[in-house]
Image (cartoon, rainbow, N blue to C red; front, side, top):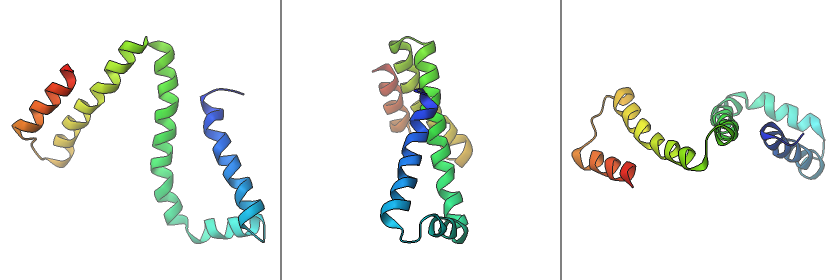
Length: 108
């Protein structure tokens, strides 16, 4: 059990144990009541947590499929993809200076 998924599960389990043993005088009942009380906050935290977990696991897959140089180039290319998505989603044009910096970053 030593793969990308277990690397994501270990911190969660350790945090839960720490909360129940050290922080809570009532054990798991406090944890459950806090989760039920703050479901909206939990949902807001779950979105970036899920995306981070997905990114980490895809990194393992990509590192096994590509050599390090290709992986690094693809990793740098995500900045350009983010800029293009920014323009499309927010309907805001990048300035010439921003495009120039993207080109220099991509070439570098």
